[in-house]
Image 1 (cartoon, rainbow, N blue to C red):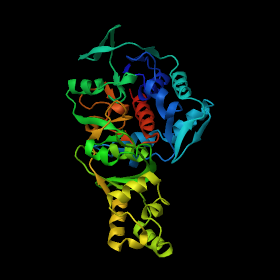
Image 2: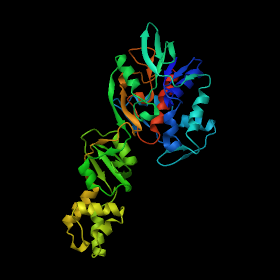
Image 3: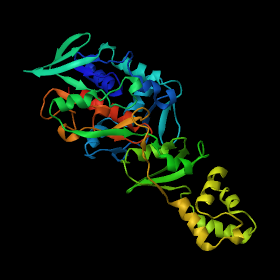
Image 4: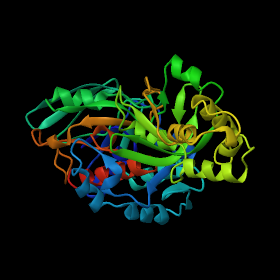
Length: 385
């Protein structure tokens, strides 16, 4: 069998197929295997999440991921990490990282795939299918096999050698592709909004951010280009051009009630000073200016305090875009899962052709979930191919 792509899903699939006695060849255009693994988690690889479940994934066909995730769980991969003696820790919200470096996960996968032939720096130039074989032409030779697994990922972080080739290949075989777009990516603003936010770059706080009915509560970071931080990366996977995002900068609190109480206790206190008890001073100053609510608390009406509270709890803004694939951690969209078997990842209309990992329209939330999909889909395919 031939696997195109030596990333997380491709290596996992190859290892499992190899254990079943299959002869496996992996082709990858990058100079080294596991390039995205190497840079993940700040170099420590956020390799899975303790709380992984189908609810942590988005797809045009949301039930597709259930089977694979049930057959190879986060606990299965944790057991594999422990088997290889890799020390790890939980950082926050169930996110697991290596104590050492991400290279340990790459070494684990290579060890599991012992006996598999891997050819790096080998670019695929054409794939054809005739009779019972797939013929893969590369800049380093021609290879043929009755089984072809596409584990090429998506076009996110192109400096790592990623591309949209898997989607191109899917279309070549007549498969539908859910329109890809960057996910887990900072959002950007136009000149007018950036001018309004001038001076806030570097300010961070916990916030709830919502698009439609989807919301997340995590850290938010103001940047020179717009907004970032975990909560923005999370919501970006659901955001579409033209959507309004709603930001609550003091989730779980009643700012109007807080300010009324502060007015009763310290009427001579400045509104900005009171608000700065709950958030960074620079942000408090901006919000008071936006709401035109400057001055001493005693001089501010309930109506003005309500306007300030509304500004803080329901700031509505329309991003003009995102930072794109250059910084996106994942690609949302991909090969339509209705084309695939949820048990084996095989294309229903083209026996012997498989798609796994990020190339498929299954995208995890931030925090190790996309690696878990790579392990689960790779395992499912490796057990069947």
